[in-house]
Length: 336
Image (cartoon, helix red, strand yellow):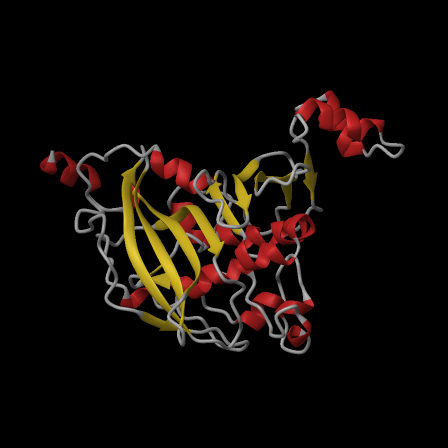
């Protein structure tokens, strides 16, 4: 006969060796967190270019838009700080079926330090809360991490479910929910391959700056990973997904400056491998707006080029600053 929760707790506590987690489960229902060390992520997008102009990651461009501290570090850079904590929680399964889902709260610039927090999961749960903070406690991102396809209540899924229909869109007026990219996009990531104007650096250059280095990512020792091959760091899965975006065909009005407002990277049959061929399938799954931005949300499915089976998925909220688009207010008024 199945034990009730109270009986099970009593049996655990009556054990001659009650653990700290057992005592916490009996006394409190308060979520507790584990955290990593303070790290100093690096800005590597100062020369990023799209639409024929520099991006918000350029210091002078960021300052013109009101971000006085300088060009922000790209959001998924912070994902690496969660990998050691979540690997400690779920082992290899984190790299094979793990999903990190985040809403970005505040920008980080070169020289600032960040710490990652992960909720303890002592009862076998497949989803936990996460957050990242600056050294002074300022929130960088909030979200969820999960394994085994537990994504129905992820941070991004929850936020998408709460979206309200936007008003007349100016920058995104030519985009529609359900719009798909112009066919499958062929991509791969080699160690010394420059990833283009959107990501003007190589994997090896990233590995020289990554906050959480691992031999599993490297050319020399990657063959010793549990999968027998070097794996692509989770933050670089985002880079792989954006490598061929010039071919996708999604064209917001411009020139205007965009940023990542939220992002979810999920492994289905992971991890992804260095030097392996993939196909990308892209679709707009939502349009939205806030007081300062208009957004289009893109789901990118990563397919193995040989089997055509999905191996990973990314949902990205591309937000564009309204005030960076010339004559935004006039065009909005005319449309209304």
